[in-house]
Length: 90
Image (cartoon, rainbow, N blue to C red; front, side, top):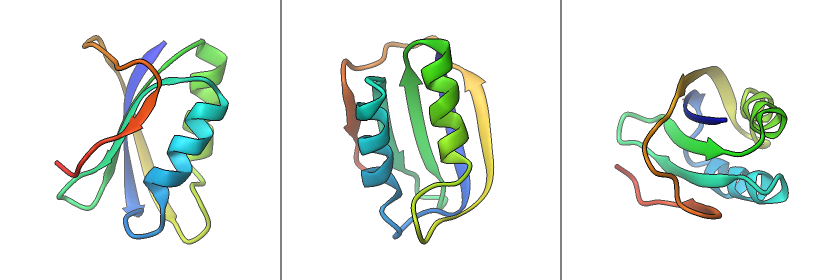
């Protein structure tokens, strides 16, 4: 399963990208995470369905200090990098 998620709320400046990178690597997912200029966090994740679903559930909570209001999930068909990386803000 490969999805793109956009996480809304108070999710920047709380270590969300670092936390998500650690979680995704522990689940051995491929993809990336980045801050967006609109204040959201965007991620693309790819891996076995149950592991991607576990990461989506974790994103609904986030790291300490985050206040997640919503997680928008949509299918993704473009290429995904191997491993899980942090990208620059876009």
